[in-house]
Image (cartoon, rainbow, N blue to C red):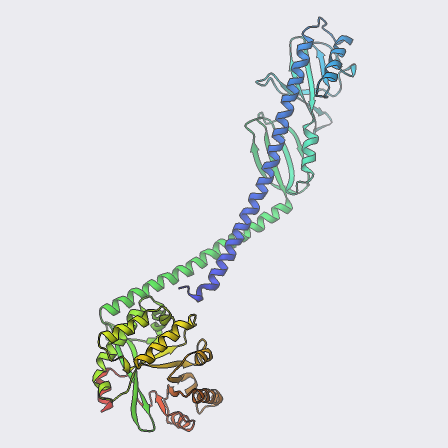
Length: 501
């Protein structure tokens, strides 16, 4: 069963985990977007190289049939015819070895200035890569050309990679700077979409051999650092939450081992506190209280362990031991009508597990006098299965057992319990009784519970009565069944017998 005390920690852990997952997905989305652009660039570059190579090979084959060794109108006609009959409308330039003129489909012209520099020698397919560089600004990269060489001439054709990349980077919200390098570390060009950039993401293409570098802008940097911050906070918060949960598990395991050992080695024992009828001055009944004897002869404080015990899986077994032990130790006093019943505390959670119904039937079959039992339903945990409680109370009534509502007004759902369930007794908690006769007393609260009890025709027991003044006020209010140190502390069975005599 989930411990509700850990619920805030679990919610915090879930929120932190969501923050970490959100950050990871944000970072993954950025990388995915950039990788998609790189793949687009690389695919475009590869397609342009293939297309350029096809055009150059076609021109080369036609030029092989010519006998000219210089730029002439015949060469221009060949280039023009290729342009008109080819699907590729990109112009091819031809420069014969040693010449200063170039031929194209546009005609004959001087070699353009500035010069085009060979940035990659012959590739596997025989292609050369050229780029025009501005001598006045070496960082101002110009368009790229692809060339094929023979001993007689050189062929050139432009590929429009740069305009394509600039267009693609216009809507890149993460990009601060982008560059492409060749295998020989030569940088074809660099584009800055933001003057403020940070960090570098590097991608190397196995297809074209190009290296792409993205630098993120400061806005993306801020998002990433914020993500880092959230992730760090989330990490340490989850460590803290995990440690708290682990401590809870360790503590629960620790107590479970202690409870199991105490039950097996009979370190638990029962004490009985009388419930006195002040009208007849006799003992009306007793409440069985669990005690835990230590090896050094001391007794553990019940307040230190009862909360952990009620949440422990061993609690039903302890309750069965309490019931059987109490009926066995008090059998003579009960049969002799010296006391009328023995109260046993049981929580709603324990009843809702469904084992108490079976246990009561087993007690009857084993010959235990269950009609002497009076179960005190505690309000320390919320009630979630009202039907199960009703069935338990119905069986108790059939077997002659009494039912009390304990600690009324201090726990969960007291008014609902009185509304939905049938009780024989209502117990006013010592927190109310202890203030009687003092300025802090809320007498109207006790009077309201007494009025409810009268309306429901059930008896009222006041616990925690320690002074004569408290007893007198309770009797004035019509409450005559008292339990507390004014009359007796909780006693082992032998001392109880002596007290009753």
